[in-house]
Length: 187
Image 1 (spheres, rainbow, N blue to C red):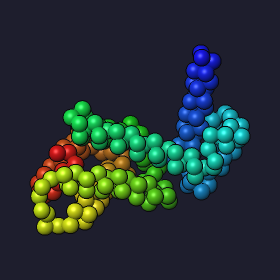
Image 2: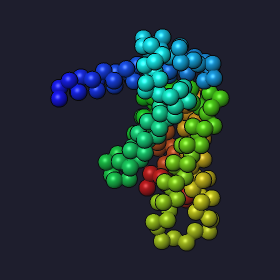
Image 3: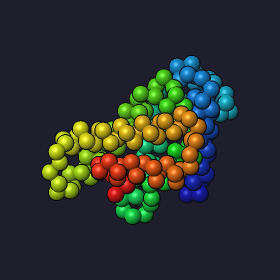
């Protein structure tokens, strides 16, 4: 049994090295210019090892993106259950600045943005459906509007090198939603 745990740790370390190498390259050049050979060389593994874990660089990008979105979902669920606060989402963006910066500035940013937008709009729609209010505005339109506003402000903040603290951003976004009397993802 102990041997399995060691193997799992080695696999985990290898995958982390591959992701780290990929992220470094991703911040240096456009996605289309990155090769599996470059990723493997930088991770100090052979290209066959990269292919053992990922079918290609698109799969690697998708897996990295899915991992970050899962973590954001987890943070949002913690907030909803009272275990977290709005600042944790901004803290997460800050902790993983290189990835998010590359995603928002890279030519494939629209795919990532769409995934984030979909998550937030669905989450907001579900929350609004749980209230008994009969809105004047269609729920889907309202959730798309709010999700777009949130993603837009996060993108603005990241592209400008995070000029404000995470607590300041969380407070500002919360006030924007509350002052405009729209459903707050922070409620």
